[in-house]
Length: 565
Image 1: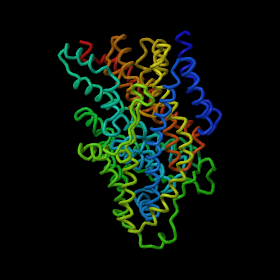
Image 2: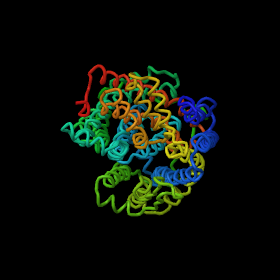
Image 3: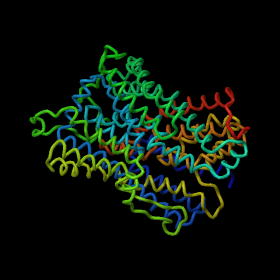
Image 4: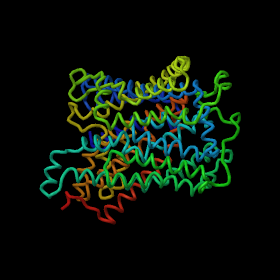
């Protein structure tokens, strides 16, 4: 079979999933089993994967599914617990006091607080935390998911304390041979990976500064009474200010300190600066924007998550703002500590259920670390919240019941989605001696565009994230491929790998299992296609601008690296 035909066959499950979800508006629970079945057929009959390897990939996927569902459960459990302690009511009032403008609320909760959480935990946690919090303060469920998904972009490359770079890029490249080549030129691996990190930070900062503007415009266009893009632009000065408040400290941290802390420090500074500015009315427009009355909302916008205070809570003495926010502060502190403190991390990862070489297949492993995963930390914080805010087990019992029900629908979808991803990724070992399905597709794309490849590098990264739902996995899949193409074209490999990492972050906005996970937290399962039709807009913006930056950097500024000397 020709390379072209193979690439088209490899890509067909993604095309089918996109047509069913976005084109025909099928719910993911119907679309993903079809895409999964097609992937299995291709794996067995076109790639000649053994049945054992396909089954092992499915079991590996199921292990990862448990981890994702654990995070989703933790996020909903914390929110429901705070609902029953009365904290959510106080938080809702607090955001109204900062600003009643929904555009500003979305920027503070998602762009600032969400980016900080991404820096600490990764795993799609910010969307899972931000989306239900937005619903709690009066956002439609679909708007909440959209805002939550849009922050799965700029901060993601340095999420989970830099994992996409430190693990994804480093493990995705042939470190041994590259290090030898670097030493021969008088450079080091550390200097090379830092150049990649700096490039990622600067590209993201350039593109990401306008994301709050786009968030405001998407909110007013799709969820406003007037369906207007320009109502989002009314907040342009404030939105750009919010963008810069995050991206400037973010870029400086990436360039001078490395990959661990850009999103953490950017989110922390951004949150402090933007909240202060909003309180003082700095650059805040005189016109306040809000949704129409809830009774006029289309049913498509509504999820099953209802955050309404109980009588017992409503009539109780109002909780102080500090007391209400303590769980989220604790969440941030514990997440950071779990990623930065070696001893604390070792203690949490010590509780682990691992499966190595599943069904005897080399390299196919899975591990579930319930305490280290954000889900475990979210549940722990929920327990602390009850002790601090209620001192009664009732909120926990009620929250557990409500949260468990939410998982059923998400679980069904992810049981097909994530195993499909793992078959894709593990298809490199086969009896037909073919490259893996993602690499076959990427090779085809590279051959198609030739010298213009840097314009496409980010899109290949996004493709990896769309398939895998992970910046880290996309970087592991494609970093070496991007490196090889750069070497062939005699352009800066560090810059091309950086474009891969940026694109992989942007691809998180359209990653199906991220959309499913975020939708599950607000009870919006079944409308993934409607969400994807919207998140494709910021993804397109991100990839086009990143592609332009890549071409200018390589052919205009002629940026080099140590391997080109």
